[in-house]
Length: 132
Image (cartoon, rainbow, N blue to C red):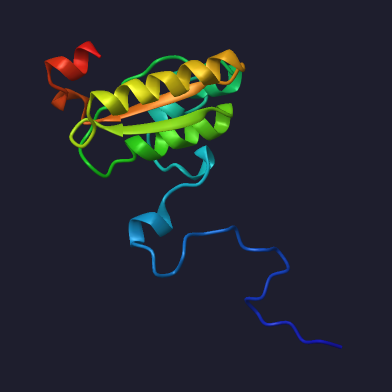
C-alpha cells in the first residue's frame, strides 16, 4: 500500500508559465474565471459577461494604467471567441504593420474567422498611421 503525502493530489496541476518567467507572466490569468476584480464588467449580468455568455462580440476600448490586465483581457477574449489575436504597439508599429494586420483580418473574414485587433498605446499613432 502506497502512503499519500498530506499535500499530494491526484488532480493534475494546470499548465503554468516557465518557473524562470517573470512573476507577472506566471500569475497572469489563463481564463476569465481567473480574472480578479472588474466585477462591474465581468460579473453576472454585466456588459462583458453578457457578451461572453451570448457569444456576441463587440468593439471595446480598454483603458487604464500599465499592468492592470488590458492585454490579458483582450487575449482571453480572443481565446473565448476562437478569434485570431493581432497585437500592435502604436509606439513600435508603422503603417506597413497596420496594413498587414488589416489584410490578415480580411483573410480571416473571408474564411469566417473573427479577428481581434489590439492596438496598445493607440493615442500615440500619428496622422499617417491613423489614416492607414
